[in-house]
Length: 179
Image (tube, rainbow, N blue to C red; front, side):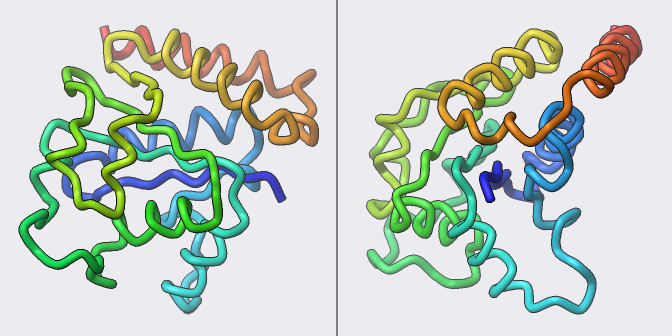
């Protein structure tokens, strides 16, 4: 199944990941967006669920907050620790040759390879998207457009006829409430 995998750190990008999950689920359907805290059933094997979702995804969105790069131990060994799921998920996506898109949150500078572990330094060379709290409507619409261009099958199973107006109303309400 063509799926969007949302990769994020709980410490900084969790709210943006949850918001993107909601917006993209409204656009493409909940079954098309994987975010671990919503998508993994209680009692399921966490590691197996994550690794299966990475293997089954078409695209991975890597949510990058202001402190994201600083959380890596780049002085450590070349092998990534299995307990750092953000790194492991990205490494697995590269292993399965999945499309990986960095999503830079408000005010985040472009990634620099020297700030990243060697196994994922290639992220710095990838074209990124922005997700800014001041431009949620525009950024999420552009992101959805880019995802449909990169992975046309993601949108094929969704009936936009009844969902699109609901999605747009939800975006308008969210924009008004944010200022």
